[in-house]
Amino acid sequence: MLSTRRDVLPPAYVHELELLQTQVSPEPWSVIEPAIIERMGRPLSDVFSRIDATPLAAASVAQVHDATLLDGTDVIVKVQRPKALNQVNQDLDIILRLASWLNKTTVWGQDLGIEKLAKGFANSLEEELDYRIELGNMRAIEDSLRRSGKFSVTVPHSYPEFSSERLLIMDKLPGRPVSSAGKILAELSDKERKGLATTLLGATLEQIITDGVFHADLHSGNIFIMPDGGLGLLDFGAVGRLDPGTQTALGLMLYSIDQNDSAGATDSIIELLGRPENLDDRAVERAVGELLTRYGGGSQSYDGQKLFDDLFNLVLAHRFSVPAPISAAFRALASVEGALLVIDPTFDVVAVARNEGNRLMRSKLKSTKITDELQRRAMQILPMIDRMPRRINKITEDLEQGRFSMNMRVLENPSDRRFLTSLFQQLIVAVLAGAAVLGSIMLITSEEGPLLTEGIHLYAFFGFVLLFGGFVLSMRSLMLVFKRGVDG
Image 1 (cartoon, rainbow, N blue to C red):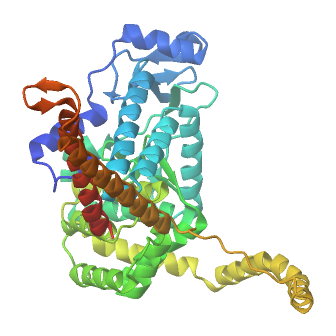
Image 2: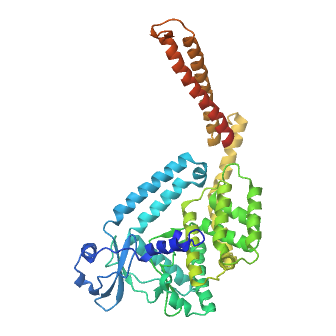
Image 3: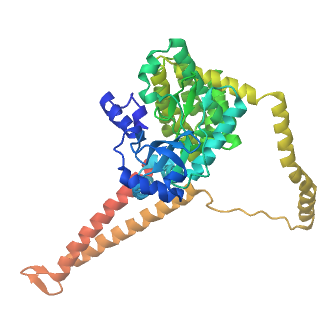
C-alpha cells in the first residue's frame, strides 16, 4: 500500500517498496520443483512440455514461472513459497495483538474499530493464501466484466484441473505490467494514456458499485498493458465483496459529490459507516460541504490522495468506525490511484471518479430497476402487514382487561453503564484513600508497640507505609475525576 503513496514517502523508499511486488529474491528451483509436483499430485512431464526454472517474478508470498502445456498453450505457474503460510501466520498474530492493544489503550482505536479492521484484513489475507478461492474470484470478476461489456479489460483463463490450494495455473497475459511498462507508455499519446486510465478507473468503480465483487489489490504490478491497447488484471487473491445496500450507498456518495449535495453525501457516509454515539449531523455536513467546495471546482490529479487523507481525517474527527468491507473498497480506490498516475501523471482522478459515479448511479436508478426495488421491498413488508391486525387486536384486548404492560431495560445504553462504573470506581477509591489516611494518622500518633529504632515504634512505621498507600489512592482518585471529565 505504501508503495503507491508517493505523497507520503520519498521516491527512494517508494522504489524499494515497489520491489516487494514482483522482485523479491526467489526461492531456488530445488525447493520450488518438488513443491509444484506435490501440489499437482503428478510429475511435471504429465502436464507441461516445458517449464522455466527461472521465475518471471517473485513476490513475498508466491513466485511465478513461465511454462507450456502439452497442447502448446503458454501458461503461468503461480506457486506459493513453502514457508509463506507460517510467516504470514506469525505476521498476522503480531498485527492482531497490536490491534487489540490499540483498541484497549487508545480512543481513536476504539472509534475506528481497529480490532475489527485487523480481523477483516487477516481474513482477507488467509483467503489470499488459498488459490482455490482465487480461482472463484477470477471467474466472478471475469463474469462481471463480460456482463458490463464497456471496458477492454482481460482476466486470464485458469485451469482448475491442474491447480490446488497452494498452486494456480492460468494463461499467460501478453504485454507488460504497468510497473515496468515505462517504454510502452512513453510511446503512447496523451489521449491513449488518458483512455487507459479512464478504463481502469471506470472498471474498478463498476465492480464496486454495480457488482459488489472487486479486485482489492490493484497496484501497478497487477495491471498489464496489453498489445491490443487494452488492460489485463492479475492476482485475484485479495477481492472485496459488498452487499447491495453498501453498493448503493457508495454510489450515492459519489453521485452526491458530483451534484455538490453535501446533505446527500453526509447521509451516504452515515449509511456506509454507521452512526457513532452523539454524532453532530450538522457538523459532519459542514465538513463534507467544505470538502466539496475544495475539490469540486476542477481539481488536479495530485489532489486525489489528499482527498482520501481529508476523508480519513473527517472519519477520525467524528469518531466513525470503518467496517472491513468498506475499508477494502477504500483500499482498492487508493491503490488503483497509484497505478492511474503511473499510466497518466496528469490524470484527474477526482473529476473522472465523479463522472463515473454519476453514470453508474443513473444506470442503477432506471425506472425498471426502481420498480423492481419497490416490489422487493413490498414483498418484505407483506408478512408484517399480515400480522398487524392480530397484534392490534391483542393490544386492545389487553387494554380492556387491564393486562397491558411495558418492559424497559435499565442501563441498556453502554455509555450509561460506563458512567456508573466509573462513578463507583471513583467512590470506592476515594473511600479507601480516606480510610488509609485516617488509619495511618492513628498508627503514626500511637505510642504503643515495640520499638524498631530509638524513638520509632513499629505501629508508626506501618502508619507511614499506609499513609503512602493512601497518597497513591488519592492520586488515583483524582486521575479518575479528570479522566472522566476528558472522556465526557
